[in-house]
Amino acid sequence: MNRAKVAYFDTMATMPWAADPFGPEEQPKIARLLAAAEIRPGVCILEPGCGTGRLTAILADATGPTGRVLALDISAKMVTACRDRIGQRQNVQVLQAALEDSAVEPAIFDVAVCHQVFPHFEDKAAALTALVRGLKLGGRLLVVHFTNAALVNEIHRTAAGPIQQDRLPPPAEMRRLLTEAGLVVDRCSDDSLGYLVRGMRLGPVES
Image 1: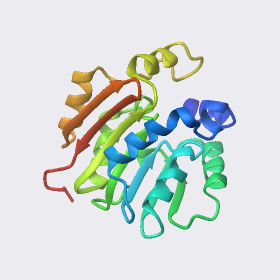
Image 2: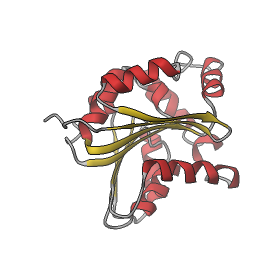
Image 3: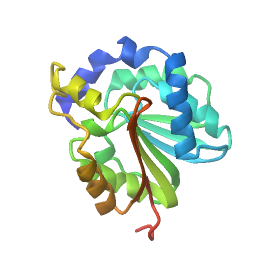
Image 4: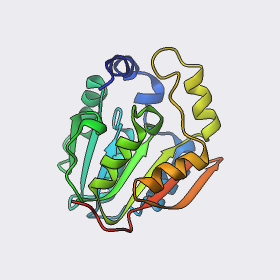
């Protein structure tokens, strides 16, 4: 776990971009995410980089009491905020953990949603290996930002602290990373609703 990033994101936990509820302008973006992820009652969801739980609560409500959300974040303060936001929902587990270091259970998740986190993975190939290992056959992995890739990378480039080098890979590299991890990339969008890439786990799930 990158301690500098842990400390950085601890300081971000009360910033408006991290803590405020989504506004009306985000609703079409959320709707696209839920549709692309095929979130429905009863699905099991893995959400690394959950932050303060803004999306976690939406995912939990969408999958309902028969579903499950496992939310991870490296920041203790983000995790505390996420647990506060989740409240009494019984279908969510929130852990302080780095995905790359986590013992994700194999082949139990229908969906993995990487919202505003993929650039921050220290080892993107290792993170994808962990994510794909957790997906069921036919499971879906989404990499999502609510702004386009160019703006994501520019925000990180101009940020202070340990995220300055964190980038969304160029399209060809992103496709290569997902393909080498065992996913079939079937959707790529980078437009006014933001950035969304979907990969499907169609091959045998390794033990």
